[in-house]
Image 1 (tube, rainbow, N blue to C red):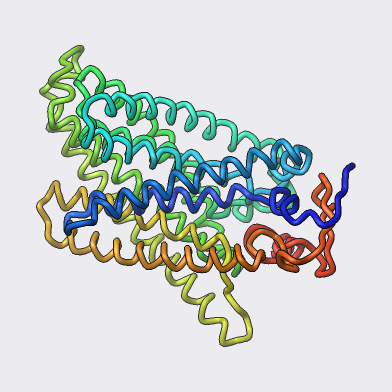
Image 2 (image 1 turned 60 degrees about the vertical axis):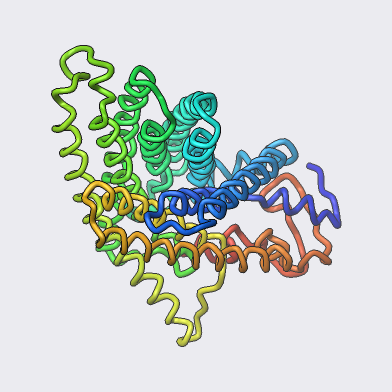
Length: 419
């Protein structure tokens, strides 16, 4: 075992968590909402592109740091993946962040610079499909094989962060449909994307509904998530909103002639496009209705835990707060698409209101994240950047004068495990 003193940067890399990928997917979600918002003003498109660029930077830096951790501290990284049920699912956020970048390549680059960028988006989307299938198989298998605890009830092992797993295939499906509408693809290119996107919908939505049922059982059993993880409850509405957005995009793509232009077999023909479109719209409405329940539960939970500050407790800032941005963003995009389909001013107004909320949440998270980076506490530097630390390649080999290492959520690891 190698231990080195004074390695502040080494400690940052050693403690670096895939939870930071959530900042990327949230920034990507905001960029898409701003690009699709029905109430456009001069310069809003440029602002959405700026968030697109910021997303690329965030994801690139996060990937570099996490890959560096894998090479410098392979034992601790592998141990964390096999033992920490809160770390492994966050790898899905990297796939989601990448897929939001693919979406903006099609929405912005293909529209601005022509068909060649549409081909780039097409290739990037199929790469996203590969990553999605890998994460949807690998992460659940790791959780089933190594994270399951026979001494705990099943419902107590289901936490909101697990909902990131189905969000990944649902995001891939939604982006596939969106690109069919904006990337100038031929019918021969669109149809395979639409078919695979529906399969991604089945993979993600059915898994999300299964998790919904088990998680609801946990809540009925009076097992709310720990206070420091209350903002993560918003993740639960993510799969429903993203599935709704995906159904709408795919239904519109079919109605605009993707199947008619392909015209093969008995299903991929013009005659079914109206039925597919109507089914997708009705399904999207039902899913958004279900998300109202989970959104209300998440809001009340965060509100209650925030008000408990008056009772001597404090809901401090942590990376978990980034989890509240993306799920709201995908519900906003679904409302935007419903507004287009129904020509509904109500849905346009609701989507604009959610967009304002998303912007406030993003800038609030950005402010406190920068503050936490300056202080060092969000990176596990409890004594700040001027402290002296001893770093090793085992989970317990991080020492400082302040006691146990803080985890990715800004609380002591021992306290979290007890919760």
